Image 1: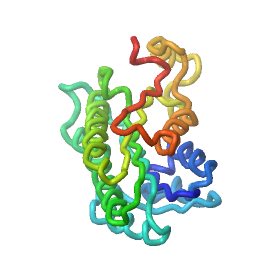
Image 2: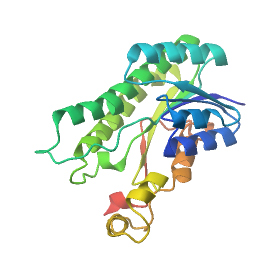
Image 3: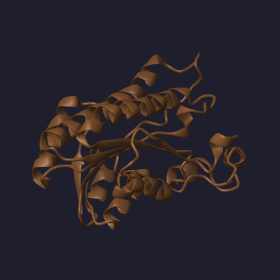
Length: 244
C-alpha cells in the first residue's frame, strides 16, 4: 500500500537518494527544503511534491505539516534528513554563532518537525515510522567536526526519547547513522586519489565511503513493516568504521 512520506532536506545529495528509494517502493513522497534552484529541480521530478520550508521556523513547520497531512489523507513516514554539515572548527576557534546555527537546524529543527508530525499521527490514530539521519560521528569524534558530531549525538538521544514516548501510539522512531557519504559534493571536496579521501578510507575496514543509495535503503528498511519490531535504534552504515 502506498504511504505518504515526508522527507526534509529532500532536494540535496542524500535527499535525492531517499526520494528515489521511497518512490521506487511506490510511496507518495513530499520533500521539504529551503526555497531555491535545488528545490525547483527536485519539484520537477514526476510523482514528487515539493514544499519550501525552513525547519527552524516552528510555526511554518506546523502549518506545512498540517497542510501536507490534509492534502494526502495523513502522514505515514517522516525522514528527518535536513541538516548543516559545513561549519567546522576546533573547540577554541569555532564561533559560538556557528554552533548555535548547527544546533538550530540539526537538533531544534529536527525536533520541531518530529513534534508536528507525531501530533498528526497521534491525532489520526495512525501507526507510523520516523527515521532520523544521524551520523557515526555522534559516537566517534573527529577533530574539527565536533559541533556537527555533537548535534548528531543529540539526534541519537532524540531518537531514543521519541521512541519510548511514541511506542504506545504505534509510532516507531529509529535513525540511520552513515559514515562519510559519497555525494557529488564529497567527490568535489575529496576527489578519487586525493590524500584527504585516502585518510578517510584508511579508517574504514571495507575501504569505501557510504553509498547514498545504501544509506537510503537502510532508511527504507527502518520505515518498513519488515522492521516493525525495531525502535530506538541508530543503525550505522559506515563500512565498519566504528569497529576501529
